[in-house]
Length: 471
Ligand SMILES: [Zn+2]
Image 1 (cartoon, helix red, strand yellow):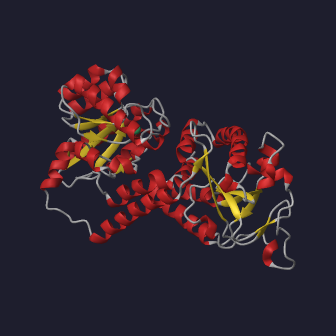
Image 2 (spheres, rainbow, N blue to C red; image 1 turned 180 degrees about the horizontal axis):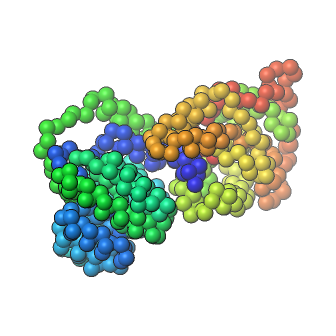
Image 3 (tube, rainbow, N blue to C red; image 1 turned 180 degrees about the vertical axis):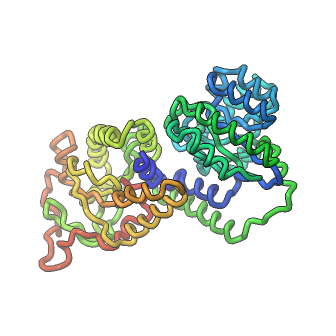
């Protein structure tokens, strides 16, 4: 599962990761940590849950602790009495989307709808509107950072999380983890519902046991849990720590680069009603390479570059039970998608002169059955930078499980998938009358003798700049 997540993180850089990273590293435009003397903030996501939320509320009452509940709208709708109880007992209620779905999977307008719908539900129960929003999995995308929405909702992430959504972490280890973060200013993320994707249904049971111990300890140390709005106020009143200018510049450049990238990247979508595969025609700029049909792909040749749809990949990723299951899904989808692509390419005048089809993939087993040749990206800028990037990701996303993930990282080496376009058409074009079949011997494809052309390595794959989202 981690491999999968890592891989998904990798390919979805541009839509979700970069802004997420910005917010995580710089704490930019979101609230994730307070600065108070004796207070920390307990926050609970994914509820309300009819079984565990009442127990949690009892516990908080017992220790006179105030918390913030980021409720899932549909759960709130089903358990209005619990939302009312949260409100009546002095807790803050925030929004965690209407259904527990990542903002990666939704268009900006849909995210807005999810937030507004949940806001309405909360308002109908408590008579008060919520001003606080926490995106599922803390995944913020660029659109969440838009000024208009930010003015209305404060995005709240967290400074400490503990893996409490897993039952097998157990109350003891969980207690230890939480105690190690028990200090003023921390925003702690916990879950009072275990029915969302990736969680264990009975995990909150362990959380409740651990929490009671932590609350006891906090009481002894004179620490108190407060609501996020109070924590925000406390921080605003505290002497301001300035954001270093260079950080702001980095963030601005990042955002600008992303905007430019999207404009430049005008991709065509194979099936707009259910996007899975995008492509663009471009000039190949890597080293010469002999393809399986013995033709030579050279610098300057037209190629069709394939890109997977990040949202779709993420969807498949969270729906599949294992990486094998994911692979099967991918294969099925590609079987459907390739004939469509072939049809499109046959009609696309821009693709007329394309010599090959290529993409970059982290999944190196499987593509052969579709007729792809797998080529190493040896020591190129792209492969070096992607390895560095992976390392970086490991340290940012998974500060805990680093060693375990390291093994996976070694298998996650990006490779190039390549297929002569004639081969592709032969395999996937439905009518046999395609023009490519009429001209199987295309010009200038004889490999030169005794040159480096026979190398199957791409050297610096300049042709792949920025395409971390390619296949
Ligand atoms: Zn959640």
